[in-house]
Image (cartoon, rainbow, N blue to C red; front, top):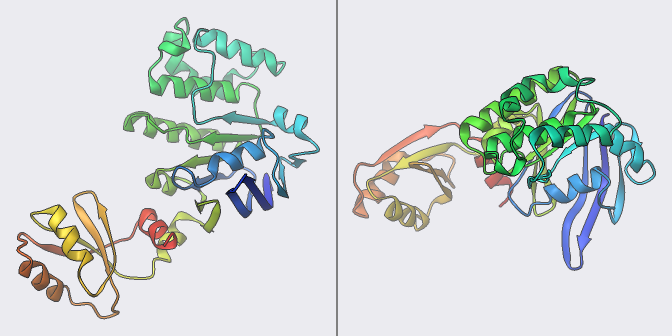
Amino acid sequence: MSISIQHINKSFKDVFALKDISLEVKEGELYGLIGPDGAGKTTLFRILTTLLIADEGNATVAGFDVVEDYKKIRNSVGYMPGRFSLYQDLTVEENLEFFATIFGTTIEENYELIKDIYVQIEPFKKRRAGKLSGGMKQKLALCCALIHKPKVLFLDEPTTGVDPVSRKEFWEMLKRLQQKGITILVSTPYMDEASLCDRIALIQDGEILEIDTPQNIVSHFPKKLYNVSANKMYELIESLKNYEHQYSIYPFGEFVHYTDQRDHFDPKELQQYLEANNLNDISIEITKPTIEDTFMELAK
């Protein structure tokens, strides 16, 4: 296993950040840690990259113990924290040269590994990092994390605050890096990115809710799910909350995702109820659940 985590616990005074976390990431796997802000993702990443020590449990990365072999781990992994942490007063080129020097290598030695990414920021190589756009900062940070050819790459919410086009490009880059044999552990609060991973762990309040492939997790959704819409969204949500047979309701774009307590649910009955609540243009259609729907169900 490229990453092995066994019964990790971590607390900060009275706050339990991680509770009995256990998971394994295979070599060459693109693995997602999926959960909202405050779920414990960054704390776990800091433990795995030897920046924090767990209260209990143990973990290995690339075969090295996170406590006893911390120096070997730091030479074997790349880490891209959630907040842009490069030197903003240095240029793109200077940042990259600096990180290469720290790891005793050169840009030229591992250029093939970063080439696909670097060519996109090379026109701005003389620009200071602090003056780059969000997407360009992201690409530079990834190049710096890769310049020493790590065995394992840790990416902590790398697409937060980045535009949709840059997010799409970034995940395409990760797929290409995976093909080069690099193990990637990425955390994200975006549920739509979960489907791009080989396997995912859903995490909430420091606890793992479920671990599986995205497809298998979605298939575990326990009920039939319906898209419900009407002419007034707020009134629709309030009416559904007061419906005696409702099991769950969540706004989802232009729809409300609705599940019913009963196994035999008649949409016509719900439509009549909504019409009696002065709603019009009502639509109730069965739909496929998403990772987000499953997460909300597990997090109840």
